[in-house]
Amino acid sequence: MATVSAYSNPNPNPNPNFLSATDQTNHNQESLPQMQHQPSSDPESNPTPNTNPDFPPPLLTPSEMVPPAAPPFSLLHLSFNQDHGCFAIGTDHGFRIYNCDPFREIFRRDFDRGGGIGVVEMLFRCNILALVGGGPEPQYPPNKVMIWDDHQSRCIGELSFRSEVRSVRLRRDRIVVVLEQKIFVYNFADLKLLHQIETIANPKGLCVVSQGAGSLVLVCPGLQKGQVRVEHYASKRTKFIMAHDSRIACFALTQDGQLLATASTKGTLVRIFNTVDGSLLQEVRRGADRAEIYSLAFSSNAQWLAVSSDKGTVHVFSLKSNAGSPCTERSRSASDPATSPHSSLSFIRGVLPKYFSSEWSVAQFRLVEGSQYIVAFGHQKNTVVILGVDGSFYRCQYDPVNGGEMTQLEYHNFLKPEAAF
Image 1 (tube, rainbow, N blue to C red):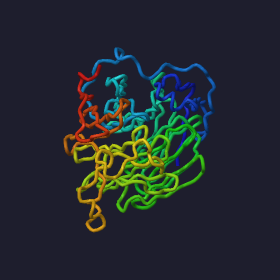
Image 2 (image 1 turned 135 degrees about the vertical axis):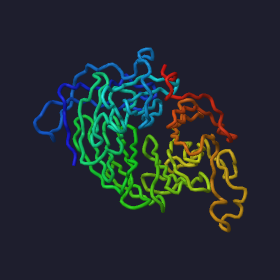
Image 3 (image 1 turned 60 degrees about the vertical axis):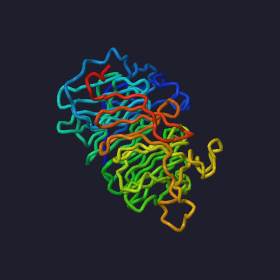
Image 4 (image 1 turned 30 degrees about the vertical axis):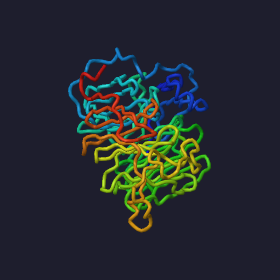
């Protein structure tokens, strides 16, 4: 059960002109949400859409407007935005937003009292964010999602639940709130509840949504161990996929929602599925030893998949299939080591264990083992961006033809005061 609280005169219209050229190209048919909350005595009442054309200024302020560095803080949250062009951190004092290319801090908000923010979910580059309190002194109750309008430097609405919020996902038209064993899907314009989904215990708040205009696909854990549930809202179809024997640890979705990558708590194999029919398209091997997979990420063209784990290595894999169709531009024989490296013992496939015919990563980057990192593909060609909970920011380049060790192009530490530009 959730309740919606509306605050008066929020005017939280995200301006579509704040989007980068890439955002506008990919979403030119889809406008950003427009909301207007009116005071009501009924806490379950739904706000009404706003047609006010006066848009607020963007969230992203010039670097010289960033205030002086705050006292030392603890990191509570770390995530990329929807197009991986920015990332957000939540701290025990507030939250900060960074640009990836070029790397720079572009905004921060430090609260006076308490201030702990355990979840920060951006909506591309606009002024609307979803915040959840966290840490020893949370700024907001951990069972509430606060809709923050940074134009007004305040919350303009909230969603309250009976248990702690594990994660939030935003689209231009939807707000998805993930609890331990339930997911709520809301319309962004009026915060009307559209759908509820029951899941297996989901302490990590695993959930992903597609970002393509008009093609909402949502993926979450199913009700069984190793099962994922795929909701195709356009066609009103639900698909269950038994992806692994072990519990699901991580998954990722392409922007159009057609391809799904999954990893289990075993962490040795990553599987790529077609979300429409649930068919297994490809299986790649991260390694032989058990590992905790921290993140999976598709490239924007769905030709590459990046994987990070507690083993301290980021892997990039070549993908053979795009929504079940061969990628003609990259289609090569299985013996080509650049795009499909296999074990040298693959000729005895079927005799020895499956390990010997496994498909391995094309490129790798070595990090500190045991530390937690998340990865995404950069906007520059053949690059990945790696973020660590220790404040590490790496930009690396991989060779799509010869593979091998990636080249480090850039390094920063976003937790150090001198990193605040």
